[in-house]
Length: 269
Image (cartoon, rainbow, N blue to C red):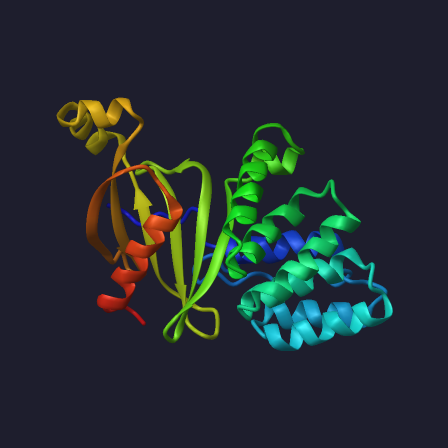
């Protein structure tokens, strides 16, 4: 199987969604390693501290970025962009409760902005608030079907960031299965500097599903599928880890992916 590049920059998309509140942002670049382009010069225009925090966040300096955004909020607590960006920085620092505090404030200030809900998903995940997380996931699915044009064009969203040893894992959920192999979830494994070294895809392609459904007619009729968990890296590296059948439940899949990453070496890391 060839390496899929769809969704390679989702942590950037998470950040760029926040930047959209602060000002225009150029097209994303650096998809190969998941880094994003620097914010446009007028992002955060009129507030140099906010602009400084944006630059720090793009440079993977989340702690400095959070300090900058908090400085803005001390004098302007109702600054929607600063609240949302502070939540983003807190998510990257795995400070879940703080991320929720800022994201909920942003939602209070701008309840119609669908991008705020993408940040709330990751914030609630970081805080272990699964019920609230899943409510936001359902809301995002509705917005993807019937919301603003950019919400309908989105392919997915950052569901969670979590630490794993010396690495950070960005878990991506797609609104609809992506690509020829029908990827439902993608887990991007990053070094401390943000560089993506590996990815794990959860897929259910139609070819395998057809033969599986013929052999498991009852389960298939109930909506279950056969899934493959595969690893991918640069230079067309690919590893088939395991198969399972059932439903694409994120929490169950996360357990499997974490076990794989802990027990198997990460090529290129």
